[in-house]
Image (tube, helix red, strand yellow):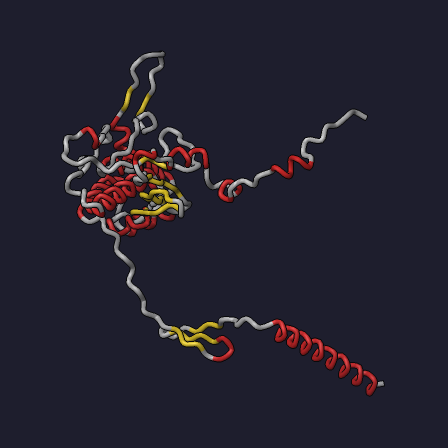
Length: 321
């Protein structure tokens, strides 16, 4: 038998260090996070802001936050689910919705810091390059860096829509247009690359959704009615998509504030045996935790009841015989 060297010996296990919890769960890239969070000592603990962009199965989430030793502190946030207030009835995770969400969080955070009048961003949405730091202003723009998490930074990804919306909204986020839709790298080494702003503008206004809606309406009307039922209920077809998003952009700029949901003011009254009655008439049972002695007594009572049942059944059989 060949000699096999034991690699994971006692010394290995004694020196083993468990990875951080979010690394074990596959949620955080700590190498990238350290680079984003690290702040120079000569800046005396100034906040280093990040624009965090995440996508769920239903919506896009954008947050402006900074890191502390206690954890990340959120300054402002916006989700694409809020776009219903601005006239967008559905489609909360596509490129156009990501742009609107980025624009919303940018205007919201600038208004919070009193910079919304000084930095209005790019009001005409044409897909062209825009950098707020290039404009002459007495104040410096609000700077943050893009945090995409574990998402692959592929060209044309929806995260770039959120980035473009935040930049057009007046935030200073260092970036290039190499990952934007419409960018074409040079075929030859050292040649000039091309950037088609109109192609990017089409994505911002949901051009790909418009094409799919028109194709589906012609080829499969039943599927079209099922897939775009919310658009149909709002009397929106492919031709009206651009107007819908244009109106949403203007409404976001007019009033980006978040409206808190009204409190229902429901009170609960506790009855016997864990019975809970709410002021709106609903009832539910909340199980009360019992002690060890009570659990043992409950089990003993069940055993005694089962034994009594068996004895009664045995006596009935004897009488029949």
